[in-house]
Amino acid sequence: MARTPQLVAPKTVGLLAAAYGLTIANLYYCQPLLPQISRSLGPHSADHLIAAGQLGYALALILIVPLGDIVPRRPLLAVLLCTDAAALVLTAAARTTGLLLAAGALIGLTTAAAVNILIPYVVTLAAPDERGRAVGTMLTGGLIGILLSRTVAGLVSQAAGWRVLFAAAAIVTLLLAVLLTRARPPAPPDLVLPYRAQLHATVRLAATHRLLRRRAFIGACSFAAFGVFWSTAAFRLSEPPYRYGPAQLGLLALAGAAGALAARHIGRAADRAEHRQLTRAALALGVASFAALWAGGQHLAWLLIGLLAMDIAIQATHLLNMTVVYSIDDARARLASVYMAAYTLGGVAGAATGPAAYATGGWTLTCLLGAAFLVTALIATFN
Image (cartoon, rainbow, N blue to C red; front, side):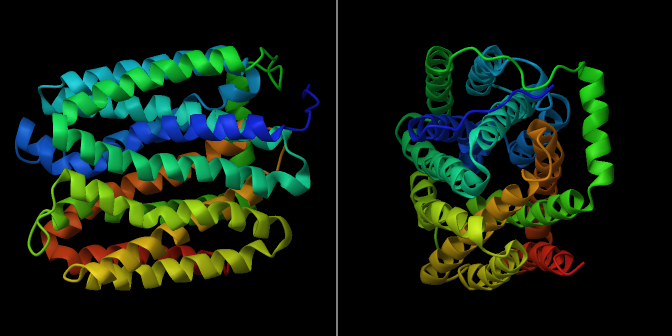
């Protein structure tokens, strides 16, 4: 039986949004550091680190996130965050490519489980006409965490090395586990259901809801485009005419800050506007952003414009998808499992194919691939 929710207080949303941002940052620290890690561990050792993290993320969404409906969240979050901290320590200590990728996958797994238990929790507590705003606040926290993670990673690694960065992140994650354990009161699970039954119910949900499948596919394609860019940007920008180091790459990520600032406004619009039209507009902006990014291969101004537009487009699409998806059913951990698993597998596909496209056809083919993913998502909105 489902537990009757109470309306969420703004300060609770703020706390959970901050926790979301600090946790999701763990998955993104590596993005501006790929060339530096490769120089440390050997050529191409970090090429698939982003994909490994996304793969672990997807696995957690399938196997762990459904627990959010059927077990108490407070101890589950504490275990996940402590394990996440241990994986960050393993990354800092990695001396081989195998250990680096295994630790990266574990970071993805624990990060995914933690943040995708937090978001359904907020949606469950929010009034129906406030869900878009609540999701927007959570995504603002997440986007700020993602943006600052790249900047902090670049600056810290430039000054002290990439291993120190991951060790410091482990300490922050442990402190976050303590804070959330103390700040959140114990609460019973939303549903009383065996784990196997919950997994079966999650599969049935995906099989019976066409809207959920469509939105999951759109999300997967949009995040694939995001993965294409960020799995190759560090390599392109470390070459002429830029020759950027980790600190410069991290600072460049701040160009996407408008995506974080826009998230709450888009969330308000999502509460009262037609979701499909907004989604089409966001995806069209994303396609255009890759044209600007292609020109940005040689010109910084176009690179900044493209990065700004891409972040707004991808995050707007994600927010709109979640607003629609979390209104389908009350078992929101199941919805998160289905939608976010597809979304993350899209990121895996983008992060895996981006470096191959760059090696084969350079920056031009890379940008064409990113745009193609978004065109595919746009076509799906008409079905």
